[in-house]
Length: 266
Image (cartoon, rainbow, N blue to C red; front, side):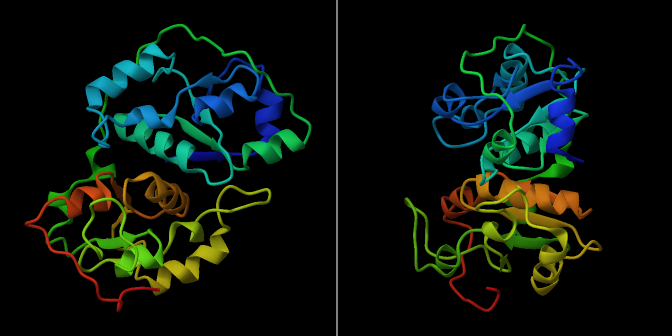
């Protein structure tokens, strides 16, 4: 489980050396100001030129080369949308990191509370990232196709879900049987919280047919928005996996069906 940590805890423990602090944002944002001691592990580098998640072994080597070790807790922070930190957090736990934590507030609000910004890149010594996959956290098209025991949750916009908006070369519509709950239901555009409060999410999830008794598979178009939903569901104690290929992968397979109906849309 990914653990949320409070800003007060991070400020107090920042100089303890007890964890690796990671900034997963774009490099321009990192160089525009980062937390003390934070190393840069850009989320975008998780994906290859084809837009797919890089092979597990390559990711483990890359993370280790940047100083991310499975022997040391990792703490991540992010801007308001939370996509970069959520995607990297999911990748870390999927690859087998045993202690991944996420700042529960947007980085800008944490800085606004009085934390100092630093501008020089932090270089960490290479470390060992011991690969220990957790396949139950990752779904593939094969897992999704014909799956009846899991609830399929599409967190793209309502327009993408219905087929009114089409991105790239995607086919219009959604994976048959999916419910739609846009990812911004799980995140915060502004304020002091990174994720929506649990009491707000509970009725929305119930209306979408998402329960703790049934596993949930989340997807968007390229996994980043869905990773925010993954973290939120993980915090609520749901059994959840991420279809990291998401709709871009599904749509590119002509043998797989798509649906343009709106019955499952919230």
